[in-house]
Image (cartoon, rainbow, N blue to C red; front, top):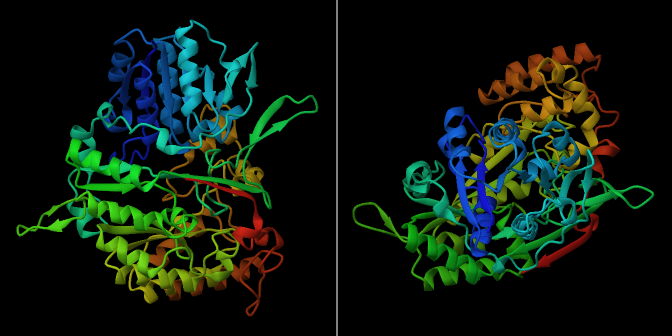
Length: 540
């Protein structure tokens, strides 16, 4: 049986490692179930120097070195694959996850050390690759869902179908990761009382997919949105994702029984006192189950004795939990039930509080629904955690003021992220040329393959600015304006608007925008989520 070394790359270097990589943990569990020998070096957890990585690579005779991660882990992945090939030149190196699925041809070009990659979902593909290794073969191109090198050219194999039943997957193999040494020490989440008191938190993923078509978000083939491009001869030449007016979603989710049994498992085996649901949007599953999914989870949570109870010493027993919600899909009674059964906080991607800007992103929400859901959640005893973004294509001074006004309406303040066109999102496709132009010459300066790679290296978690898609503001302006917003300096924003209008020759009384119209055609191609989705498939 194959002997595999998984390497989890570093992500969010500026923050502590807080989340076990769920995809890798599930792939490891699948491989172990088939009898393969699996080891993990969690570089994100340990963050050791090169000497330690070399020591790990030399520690055994591996049959495969497997890496994977999201796009923001690219810099770490680039370093790790180079070391892997240098130390183990005869061992195949594979790469999976969003980092390669979003830009397969480019990443394979930038990382010649990678022998083959996994495109889209890899639950089945990975096991087939291990079977090929057992057979002493390296014909990766014969396995669906891969990109590999054949005769010095990149070869796309046919698309891999998605699995239908998430309940068929084994529980994540948490034991392979340093949960005691690292992850439990970083359990606390500064969003609620229960979150702050969490000392043994583990993550759970109960679904794959989201019904929304947010143009800044990426789904990377695991939600059915990936399409293969072919030439006149039928040869696959590349993959593409969301394009204006062309969306497909396959939403899959675990049964309530699976979700609660997994939660009970982490409680009993690891003495967990908090679980965080990593799902894109918990309310999607609740809506498509006709409001039964979360009700059943809460019912079973109580039946299995997981509902938290506060003890006299101020600590809790049971299992608190948290996750995500959406302004237009939540309901007061659902939220109240969740709060009564241990849900301590919910993250809301409000993004904006200007209806004109909200219309451009495909979320289906409005300023009214955002504010309403915030207070509904508070009334249910759950902390709403809002997320805001500035720098959208049609962002202007009025919309920035609307963001600030929302803080007064909500009685809180949230430091906005910057709108970032991540690979795999619709806005990356739409603004790709502009992105590359912003990084013109930087690839060569940094010793990289090209300017697009320079952009990928520069990507973070959107808390710092990278490529700008705003038509009205540049990077320096957005950073400065955000600082003024945080200090509630309306007067300085007003003063700068006068300078900005003078610079761009836009008189008082005219909209403060460089767009041809206040709501450009390009920005309003999405109006309603349901009418713009070609195929919305839901699998329980």
